[in-house]
Image (cartoon, rainbow, N blue to C red; front, side, top):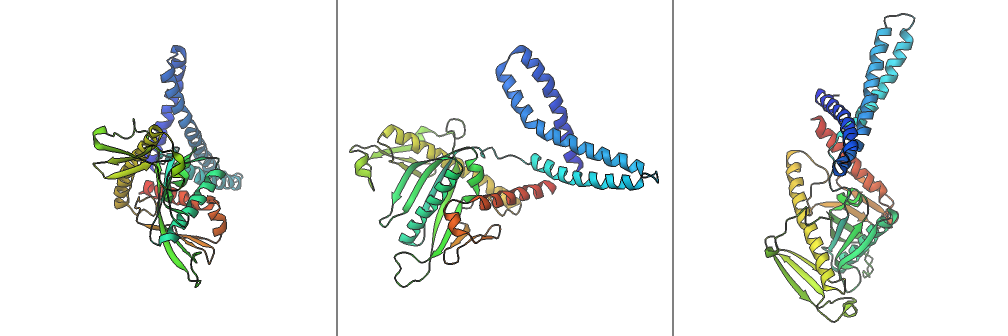
Length: 358
């Protein structure tokens, strides 16, 4: 392990000792805000330092066994001890490196999932509906809640554009690599000659922002319009101007919401989506800068990038960023995304570990 990493671990181990003393003091003075903050930090550091103690123990075992090598009667035993300790050391070092990786502050956040039909006309809109069903089923498997925010249905079914809010622990961490271009190859239901068509959709996964703390939105930068809900089911929502359209003038971003009967609720929901889009733009700018300094297979934030192909005739899904091909398309479209999301997360972790070693 690098000296710089060992120095960092020593520093964190010393900090844990400090926290033990501070918690004893704070417990006596009953400053609850400070106590909670220290307790949280202690809980985060304890597993890391415990692992580091095991690492130091393995080093100590190797040193002790090397001394025994001088004794002919103990040589065989000492060599076995050294090999065993080295094996433990290798695993512990990798685990420590993973725990030292920078954490994504957005990982535990809820998300807004936006799917837009692209090239392919009605078939693209149908595929957008299929993608929404896929992500909804995945959310159900994780016991997450899915709320419709905005939808623009197409004439033959599916969506020209749809936005949902997914509420659940770790939603962003599991779905953050879904952003990008999704291409489908299949025979559309409207195709009479049996020819395979190719169409595409764009997916955007945006962590939900706390507009008060995360994003500074100047009310003077907003134009807010109200109008009567329209589209499928619109006539049943109400007969007043409850739908809301918010335009963020500096960026030109436009958000519409008409899912609720209440204009107030639609406006609040639209503001949440706007805040998420602005936060997402900041994240993509940051990711683009990072990708410019090192090769990044995933997480570049480029929405125009084609990340995945769904080939229905062959039952095949291919993620082009990590060269992963799975022949279980029916299961994937039914929400079985674990193999995919785990592989993407592992690849991202490997990138971070490689960058840590540079």
